[in-house]
Amino acid sequence: MKKMEKNLTKFMNKLADFIGNPKIFAVVFLVILAWFIAGLFIEYQTWFDIMDLCIFVSTFFLLFVVQSSQNADTQAIQDKLDELIEALPGADTNKKREEKQIKKGEKK
Image: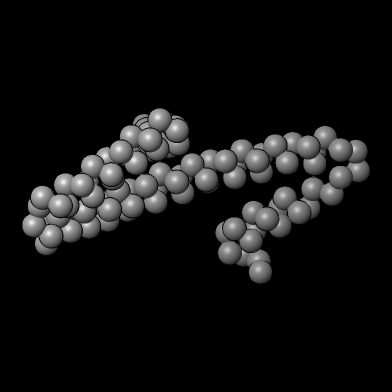
């Protein structure tokens, strides 16, 4: 299970980097433009159903890719902040324990 989670994490990170590329934005823009032009030659209901399905599936999967990327970024920032706090002389590290308790639902 850990290996599968590790492989999925790697894949999602690579996918997030790939999708965030400006070249991909340009390609997607051209695909959408071509799709709208194709709508002039395809029956509306068929054209709309294909477009609707593509939008639903891509949005569904990209939601998880973006959330995974955001979680990784947030964890990296939190780790760096924790390291800075621990490096400061006289810093109060009790907040770190409180944050973990809040995330576990033990404290409000």
